[in-house]
Amino acid sequence: MRKFLATPLTGHHREEPSDAPDQSRNAKIAVALIGLICICAVAVMTADDVRESAYRVSWLVLSSVVLWVIGNVTKWSSGSSARELGVAFCMVIVQMLVLWLIFSAYEIVVRHIDVPILHRQLLLIIPYMLAPVTVTVLTGATLGMYTVLACAFFGLAMFPENCPNEVAGNYLIISLLAGIVSTRYARYEKRVEPLIGGLISGGIVFVSALALNTFRLDGQPLSFHALLVSLLVAMAVNLTTVILFAGAVPVLENLSRLFTPMTWRERAAGNHPLLVQLKQKAPGTFAHCQEVKILAEAAAIALDADDDLVGACALFHDIGKLSKPEYFSENIQDQTATPHNALTPEASALIILGHVDEGVRLAQEYGLESRIIDAIREHHGKSNVYFFYRKAMDLYEESLRKFNEGLVDTEPQPVDINNFSYKGPVPRSRETAIVSMADAVESATRSLNHASMEDYRNMIENIFRARVLDGHLNDSGLTLGDLEVMKDAFVSAICASHHSRIQYPKAVV
Image (cartoon, rainbow, N blue to C red; front, top):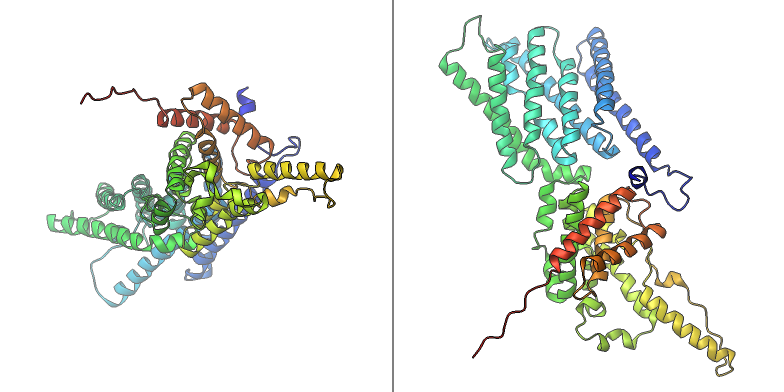
């Protein structure tokens, strides 16, 4: 049973596995090969001669094999997308170029100016946390840790020939320690976290370098003043890295189309102009979005998905209803006086279906992120507006009966279900699928009054069964086991939200 529940949703023909995993794997392999070629090209272009170029390429290839073995054993990169791997490789290249610039500047300085600076002291001014923290914030801690290893091993190729092996070895140790510690504080869920990470990373660099005995001048221990200067330099470098990183985050997000938890939390704060308009013009829809957010975040946490992203998507998924809020049931107080009474089923369906395209248009106009736009576009998939489709079928059957009985001369045209169906696509990620299912569950369970947990569970079970059978979740990446977890999360969240309340006695006047 457990094995069955872990089966991926691959569509109606279960014997034909989806080729999506193969395409993703091929894309990641291509990105890895291109990334390695680019890294080798950087190493060759910055080398002084052919012999050094050959050494660097050999070391990089050997390191790549080691990293590939580590990656396969730990599965650190298995859950990453090709885009995330591309970002990681780009940041590793940036880290290597920074190392080259540091050593090149050092060679120029000591060649023209007589300064008592040794190679071992350069370890203080290397921004070890630059690439690992950036990758961790944009893609997650798993790939961030893999980046720590890549920076440590690949960085060794950039050390000049006249640099002592002891310094290179110390770089490897400090890079690993500083990278691992800095990624621990790189979640960027609070703006103060990178600052804390910078302070701790600076301390790690200083203490590690001191413990490895790298700051001895001419064999003599450093004085208190020299130690203080070394500490300040290490702190200043890491804090400067943090400041530059914080300023570059918006640019990096837009370039990579990968976004930090802080971005999603800012979007979900509720003060965005679109959400303010939704609250004022369509309070019922706004309340619905708030409920969907609660359900979606509960499911995302249970599935270890990105709950910050899910929460933001849930709040914006129905912003398209802003154009005609009075035509949606949650904003109609008296359902007997609905404006749809004056419209044909086709016209009503056109308005309902149009809220998806209108939502995408508004999201693009206000510059919302692509992941939110995806959720708006995909949350209904290719489902149909069954209420109006059924109403159109009833009218068609009635008109057909009258035609067959000779009561009317014109034969009615059959109802085209495409006129009552969303154009999709179906959800293409776990997060958009979670929002989609939370939307369906919230809309359906809203009609239940004084329901028991079993009532909610049965209704949710029926919704999930229908969505699985019509292929709505085929491209979401969710397994049947994930759906079971999601159902339980929805039931718990709905029961907590719709719990019964005690009846208070009337006050005696």
